[in-house]
Image 1: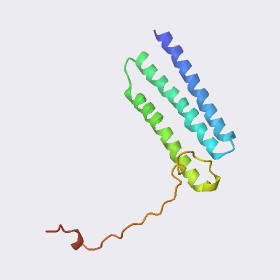
Image 2: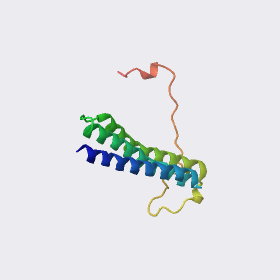
Image 3: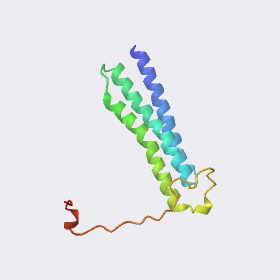
Image 4: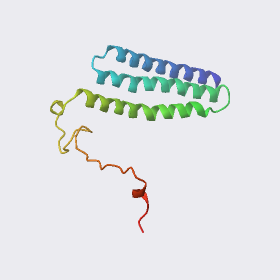
Length: 135
């Protein structure tokens, strides 16, 4: 059983290392910033996930206990990386694109969050008298 666990550990480490190298290489070589965003969020996430799954497998098969820390880190990483990429992409759209540069959206009237609506805010009262309940 220990030999099978060693082989699986080696396989997951090689897979994780491969994805980590591919993500790092893509970050360096891709020209556009949106393309560069894709490389680390997809490939490097899988690389770090492979290493964490290796650690989880090793702790269970070799050391005899189930480490929940690696499982929680893996889940956190897989949940937060796409959300972070989405926020970075939307910030890039706001900073570098104009309405006329974006493609047609079809049935929608706006492109993502780029629609500019004017919001009129009402002034806040400085007096505590306005905050008293009415009788």
